[in-house]
Length: 388
Image (tube, rainbow, N blue to C red; front, top):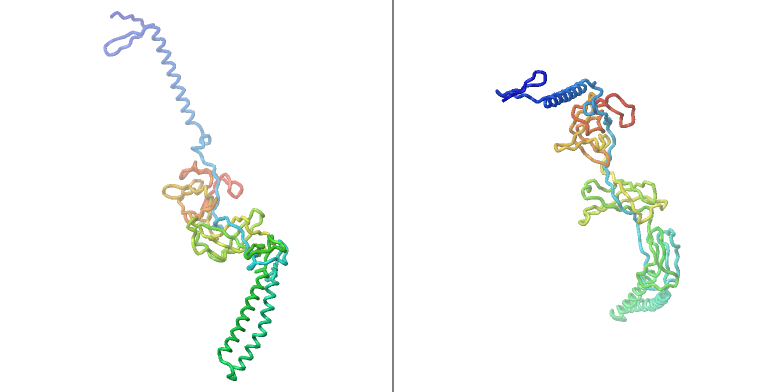
């Protein structure tokens, strides 16, 4: 093989025992590639050197302290409550209906007025019954005299015992008829069964009423009852005398009542327990049928430690929180108790005075450095929160 060799322009390359000489144009491209590769290597080396020389304060958030908020654990009052919905009911309610048929001759109440117990409300016509009563009384005079005479004759053995018994029986029937007439006359007068407020009447004077026709309703509005249902899991906490609070859509006021009765069984349809409480209502502000939102206090814990729900991390092996100690986040297992809408009771794992981390939890690891941004109670910020 003939090879062109020139020290200034040619360059020989050996592969094994063979020697190859590059063309001048090929050597030029080869040199440029080597030069470009050198520049890339120097640039990469310079970049790595600059990163190593950055001061610690310029590191990203992943490597530096995490800004967090803390809350100092303190014993507080914790209420275990259950919420429910119910209705306001009249303490007593009755429908005014006649027991006998008759024509109304007098209405002695005003619609919507409060009436006292045993006040006469409605009077029906009883003229026929009064006439029958007078007839009975007249017959009673004759029968009484006949019974008296035959009793004396019996004592003298002038008549038989049977004759006297017939006279006495007639007198007793007359007396029974009089009692029946008096009872029927009494049914023509309708009285208030209790002190309460009468509603709107459905009849007028002169109307002929059949027995059991509705005339009006009467309700006792002071006190009132509150009826509501709670889930069956709470039945162990409920007993007579417990206090509840409730509100209505008709008022911004909060009312209190006391439980006075609990249903003896749980509803199989809803699996709830029906409860009734009683509330004073002197002003009549609470109306029967009003929708009520009830809160019942089941338990009171005067010295409970409670923390925000978002501060608790739920894991497969239990619940954990982060506590700030010595400027570092320390993961601590805890045992939880009652949960409310926004807080959780801590039974063990945290003691009063611990600085609980409540923000930045997703950026923390056990032992990670932290900086306290501010206190939960809007206290001035401190460099580092620490529990001792």
